[in-house]
Image 1 (cartoon, one colour):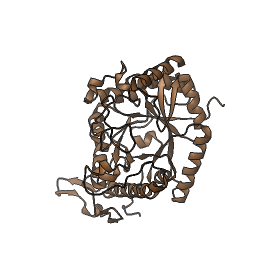
Image 2: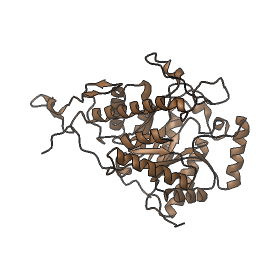
Image 3: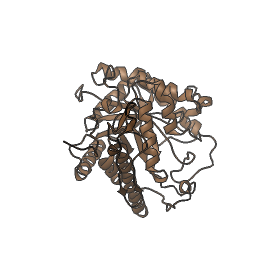
Image 4: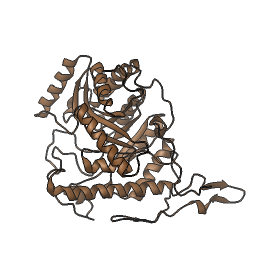
Length: 401
C-alpha cells in the first residue's frame, strides 16, 4: 500500500446521544446527565473543531430510538429521547468558528418550505457553515404522529414487498431536496437593496416564484429568507443500496455509504458514479464518504476489551449498518487510506462513546493522518462548501448577461 494514496482526506463525525454503542451512556466518559444540555453538544462540537474536522452531523428522528428498525420497543436500558437537530446546530453555531454543522431532517413528514428557511437561517447564524442531511421514514408509528398519511408496514428495506414503498419514499425525498434548493435560489444574491435614501429595501424583480409541481409537493415560493451565504448549503444523505444511491446521485453533495472492505467500497463508488452520470451530473462534484463506527484506544486490546465490556452491559453484541473498527489510531489511519484507494473521498466516523472516541479521533487519528500528509493542518476556508472544495453555485433564477 502506498504511504499516501490521496492528498487530502475529508473527515466528519456523526454525533448521536452519548455515542453509537447502545450502552455508551454507561461508560465513565459518557456524561449522561448532561445529554439534554447545550453544554454537552457544545463540548463535542468544540472538540471536533479542535481536530480540524470538516463537519459534524446531528442525528434526529420522529420517534423514540428503538432497537428494532421499524417498530418501537419497550427498553429502558438505552438512551431514549433527543433534542431537535436543527435547533441544536443553531445553538452551537455561535460557539464555533470554522467547522460545518449538518443536522438531520426526516423528509417524509416535514415540509420543504419550513426546512429551506431553517437551514438558510442556520447558514446565516453560522456565517456559511450549514449543511443538511436528509433521511426518509418507513415507520408506520411515525406517520401516526402526524395523521396526514399512512406508510405501509415493511419488515426490511430490501424485501420484495418494500421495493415500491422505498422507491416512492426516496423519489419523494429527491423532490423535497429539489424544492429546498429552488427556494434557496428564489432570492437572487443582490435582491436586498437596503437603500434608506430611496426607501427601497428589496428589489421585487429579484425574488422568484419557484412554481414546483410534483406528486407530493406543490410549492409556489419565493422563500421568506434571503439566499443563504453559501448559496446552496451542502445536502447529504446516507445510502445503503441502489435506490438511495440514486438519491445521492441526483440531489446530494455528499453521500455516506457503509462498505465493509475495499472491494465493497469500490463497487459502491462505481454504482454511485454510474447513477450520477445517468442523472446528468457527471461533471458536478459529489463526495462519497465511508461510515465507520470506531472504538479507539492507544492499545488495540484495550479498544477490543472496551467494546466487549459495553456489549456485556447491553446484553448482546453490538451490530449495525456500518463496519465496526476497534483498534489504534495508526491502524485506523491504515484502514482509511486503504479504503480511500477505492474512490472514497472522505469518512464520517461514528464514535462508539462520544466522550472517549471523539477525543481519540481529534488527538490521535488526526495527528497520525497529518504526519502522513493526509489531512489538513489548518482550516483553509471559512465555509463548509469551501472546506469540501465546492464552489459557490450561481443562482438558477438570476438573469445571465
